[in-house]
Structures are given as structure tokens and as C-alpha cells.
Image (cartoon, rainbow, N blue to C red; front, side):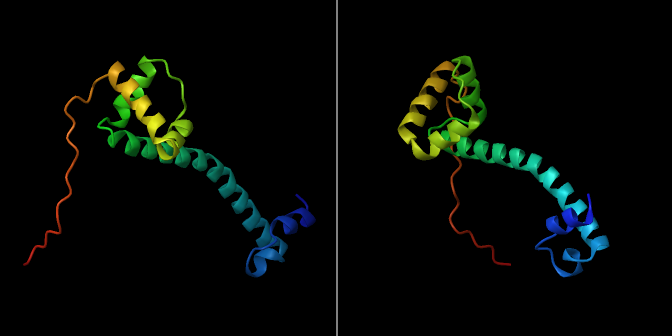
Amino acid sequence: MNKKEILKLAKGFRGRAKNCIRIARERVEKALQYSYRDRRNKKRDMRSLWIQRINAGTRQHGVNYGNFMHGLMKENIQLNRKVLSELSMHEPYSFKALVDISHSAFPGNKNIVLPTRKANVAINV
């Protein structure tokens, strides 16, 4: 990259990193490395978030995430995790229907016990 392109990319940086070409080149290269890495991490983080949302929704109905997904696969319901997480948040009745279908296909959680929250337990030493 030439000087003009580097300084254009370095716009908004702090200190000499925005106008001194040697420092700007280093900062721009590092910024491009971070952006490359984080474009991949963003996909990873979003998938993790969707799984957490689906798990929270299924546990409200007495099924855990793994058994829910296994039941959907057995019933050949091909909804991706993004759509399932949106359903669990915004369409609870539709999501309940999916949980029921999944549970009938794979009743792995017959006697699930939801953890109880302990009241404020103070330990005096």
C-alpha cells in the first residue's frame, strides 16, 4: 500500500499513528489483522449466543439443549440455530410446539429436575 492509502486507513487513530507514516503503517497492519481475526470470532460468538438462547428456552419446558436438537434431527426438522433462537425469544408458543415435537421424538429428559435457587445464605465466620 502506498502512503496515501495507509493514512486514509489510519484516519481516526490516536497520536502519531494517524499522521506519521512509519507508525501508521504498523498500526494499520495490526488493525487489519484484528479485523480479519474478529470477522471469524464474530461468527463463533453469535453461534454461542444462539445456543445459549435456545438452551434457556428449552429448559423452561423441561428439556435440555442437546436432547432438543437431537429430537429435531430425528424428526428431520431443519431449522438453523439463528431461527430457533429468534423463535424462542419472540414466538414462545411456536417454540413450545417444536419442543413438544422434539420431546416426542426423543424423550431423553423424562424426569428432569430444574435446579432450585437457594435463598440468601450468609456464612458468618
